[in-house]
Structures are given as C-alpha cells and as structure tokens.
Amino acid sequence: MFAELPLAVLLLIFAAAGAVVVLVSIRATHMADLIADRTRMGEAMAGAVILGGATSLSGIVVSVTGAAGGDASFAVSNAVGGIAAQTVFLAVADLLYKRANLEHAAAEPANLFQAVLLMILLSLPVAAMAGPDLTLWAVHPVSVVMFFAYIAGLRLSAAVGEQPMWRPVETPETRHDEPEPENDPDAPVTRPALIFAGLVVVMGLCGWVISQVGGAFITRFGLSSSMVGSLMTAVVTSLPELVTTLVAVRKGALQLAVGGIIGGNTFDTLFLVFSDVAYREGSLYQAIGPTDLYWLATGMLMTAILLGGLILRQREGPARIGIESVLLMAVYASAVGVELFAA
Image (cartoon, rainbow, N blue to C red; front, side, top):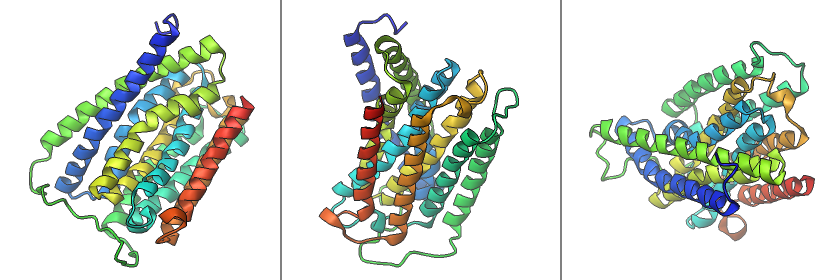
C-alpha cells in the first residue's frame, strides 16, 4: 500500500505520524504523573513502567512488523538505535536544566538499578549472536531468558524504590519525589488510566504507519536496513521520550524524566524478544550483521556512561552539565558517523 505512493506523500505521512506521536506523548506525560501520584508508585517507577512502556509502543510495532516481514536487521537496529537515541536525550535535557547537573538532582536508587538491568539485558543478545544457533519453534532461548529477566528486574526495581538499602547524599540541588500540590493523591485513578490507555493505542497505530514508510524507503531507494532502522524510524519513534523527558524536567519531575528514559530503554530490549518471536526464519540474533552489533555495543557503552554519571552525581561540569552528558553526545555522534560511513 505504501510502496506505490509518491515520495512527497511518503515523507508527509512519515512526518505526520511522528508529529502525532509527539503531541500524544505530551499528554501521556501528564497522565503518567497523575497516575504516579494517585497510586503512590513514585516517579522513578512510573517513568520506568508506565511512561517508558507507553512511549516505546510505537517503536515495538516498527520492530515486530519488520521482523514479521523477514528483515531482521531493520527490527534490531530500530530497537537498539532507539536505545542510543533516547539515552542522548537525557544529555539534551541536562542542557536545558539550569539549576544543576540533571543526574545529580534526580538521585534515585531505583534508576541506578534500572540502568544495571538494562546493561544485563543488552548483553544477552550479544551472547546469542556469538553463541550457537539454537532455536525452539524458531525462538532463541535467550529471548525467553530476557523476558523473564525483565519481569524479575521490574519486581526488584520496585523493591529498591520502596525499601532502598541506601540513600543519596542530600544537597541543595537534590530534587525530591513529591506529589504536586494540585494532584490529590486520594483522587480516583480510573479516568487518567483510561485516557492514558487511549493515548497508548494512538501511539501504537502511528508506529505501524512509521514501520510501513520505513520499509518503503528501504525497498525503493536501496537503503540499508540498519541505517533506516537506527537513524530514521528509531529516532522518530523515540521522539516521545524526548518530549516526555523535556516536559517532565520542565514540571520538575526529574525522577520521572530519568526513569522514563532508562525504563523506556529497558522496555525496548523486549523489542528483540517479540521480534525474535515474529521472525519465522530462525534465530533473529543469528540473522543480523556487524552494524547491528555495533549499535548494541553503543547502547551498552552509553548506558554505562549514564550509570557512572548517576553514581558520580557531579554538580556542575562543562557548560553547567555533567561530564557524562558530554560523553553521551560524543559517543552518539561517533556512532551516527560510523553508520553513515558504513552505509
């Protein structure tokens, strides 16, 4: 259906779907904040579970659609390219938060644990790529391990958030996770939850549209699946994370902003799990190439840098941002350069 459309129409559809995702994500951020306050879940967990999963839905539709169509590289590069893009969004938010280094002000043990979980989940596909080609019903055992590791990790993250075994040092710049005065914590959560669910459906439909347009670009112009996945569809479907992060920072919900990125990235590793199930030609991990592995390594490196910044909690660095933000932007720019050169 999309393959025969003129280029101008394809670009218009692509831009329109991206714009809808961005606008919907702004409303979704407000709803997630309400849900966090009314359920007393906390901003870090709400960002990781509710907001992170919702804003990732359009991306998961893109990856699964690509895998079902037999394009393993497109499915994987969209997933791990999105993780890299979303991580660098925190550096952008750090630039805009003038009071202190964002990672310093948003100190939260649950976010540290989520970052560790993300590194574990990113390492498992690398092991699957390097290991033997084993499948059961065309699904690699690593996908099963990743799914249950994610579920177990969420439970442990919740425990860390509710009963932390250590607390960050208090400074004047430390921002506490407290309900906003206008958000009554005893108010019903049903209405914001239903609105949030409706917004999630819209983001999922937009993800399908973006995947179809991305596939048309690959077929029509002979572009590499890795380049389209990591630099086009991944960035567009990651725009909700950028918007929600900036909106959360502006509202002062710093734990929600950081948790949304890290939690969203953690959820994005499930793109690989669901894509492996959708890919019927064998193991997804054995069907991808060196460029996709490079983006996996980039995601792990950027997550490690972010985790180091969260632990270091530098108050001010170059240009009033943390050194981790400078490194994140440098690593991502280098990865984009490598992708374009390899293409």
